[in-house]
Image (cartoon, rainbow, N blue to C red; front, side, top):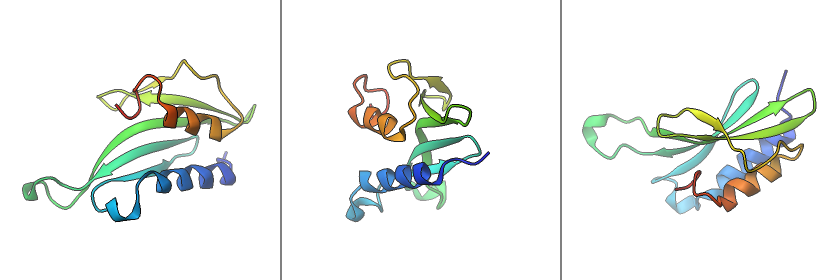
Length: 112
């Protein structure tokens, strides 16, 4: 099963638009693809030279796709990078509904 290409492209555009180009050397919002879900992550450069060149990655949200009914479900990430169902939004056939809820973040669970 593959994720809908148009939805993947939409989430990737949304991620790219979250951070101005002139700040992308300090923070990036990106989308990691898996077979049945997308994970929105925040990446930051090493804050100390002893940590090496790799950027750190923190999960923001996971968007799971159900091919049976073509719906997306939103999950949030706790401090241990474990995902939990976000109960304030029903599954939706529009990935935009999930992105809007992440933007709105009424509980401060996605962006703090």
